[in-house]
Image 1 (cartoon, rainbow, N blue to C red):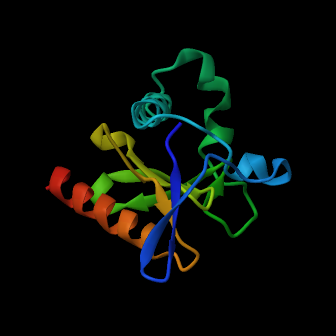
Image 2 (tube, rainbow, N blue to C red):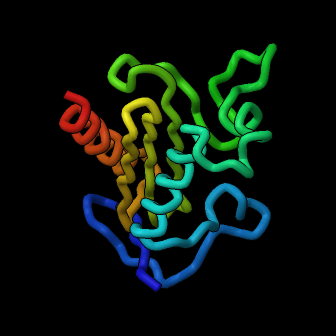
Length: 143
C-alpha cells in the first residue's frame, strides 16, 4: 500500500498507511490504483454515452442534478456544460487528506482524464496543482 503524504511547512511528510474515520469513509475511503481510477473514469464515460445497457434506467438520476435545487451536483458528480467538451461534463475531485484525485469526463468528445497524487494539504495547494494539470491536459486534447 503506498504511503500518503501531507504538506507541512514547505515539505512533504510521509504518513504511515491509515485512513479517515469510518464515519466519513464514503467521502474518502476508496482505495484503488491509478489504473483502476482510469478504468472507473472509462466506465462512467461509457455510461454517460449510454453504452452500458443495465445502467440506462438510472442515467437520468446518476448524471442529472436534482430539479428545483440550485446545484450542479448529481450523486457524486458535478455536471456542467463546457464549450471545450461540446456539452455536458462530469467532474469529481477528492482527498482523504493524504492522497488527491480529480476526474473530468467529456462524453461527447469521448475523453476522460484522471490526475492523482499521493500528497494533500489543508490549504488546497495540491488540489489546485492537480486542477491546473488536468486543465492543461484538457486544453491539449480538445484543441
